[in-house]
Length: 360
Image (tube, rainbow, N blue to C red; front, side, top):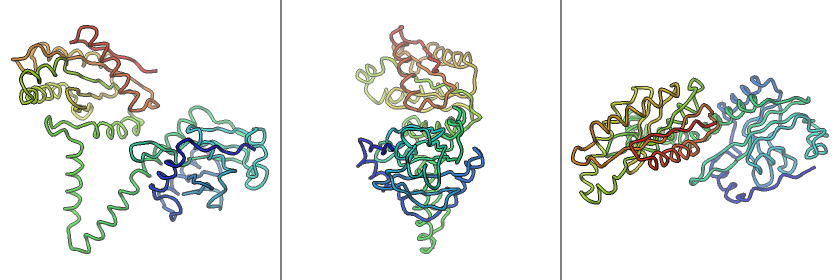
């Protein structure tokens, strides 16, 4: 039997696990409902949400077994946490890592196992807390499509974990405020206002990077109806020279005018325009043919070539870099990196240009 190794960041990972406030907590219906749903979807007898601490794996929810924890050294999930990627074991009885594992040789006599890591963001870093895993008593295969769906269930689980602590704090605060005769509606309005402010660029009144990341999680990664995405990075060339020569007040006017010009080309309710920072804007568009994305980019360029953002400074040009993807496995940073690389190609090509890459 191969013992699961420890990740290099084990101390920080355990700190993140403790910060999640999941360990040794009572049953919660939302997690039990998820393991039941996964069991029915994959037609497996056992599904577990496993959290791996220093010496054990503890189950936040487990369907099909009457157990709350096992030793970490005999856990399959410890291997997933170590490598940070899915593990599929079609037949543990013939797998050199697990054939003599007590959980294979004795009760519960595991034969098939598939597990994907549970990610958790703590202090700006991502750690693997444990796994969402499916288990069977018989040998079986697990297709790439099934693994993708298990990953989507894990993404849903991660979302539940991310919102769990704020929801609990909100509930406790609500009860306290109700005791103090403060209207809950006022509190909710205040929270919504704070969220809006935190996700809005105050100069252009466009959404900011924080909002962009959230809307991608909701509308791209979390919405199966969206079949493709185009992320355009729009950059004002020579903007620094204008700021240096004429002052930030003039630069602010230009940025506001640029924002208004870009908004005129956004499809209401379908496209999202954000100020990404400095003189960069990002436009996210869904469910168009590739030709539609290039037509949109050309319309934006034409708008600024024909009617500059500020008539006194015609030396400002616009460059656009974009990436198109149909694969939700490409994370936010991958999309940004691709669009940014295409942006620099457009700049090198003479500016007032656009370049696109189709990610595969």
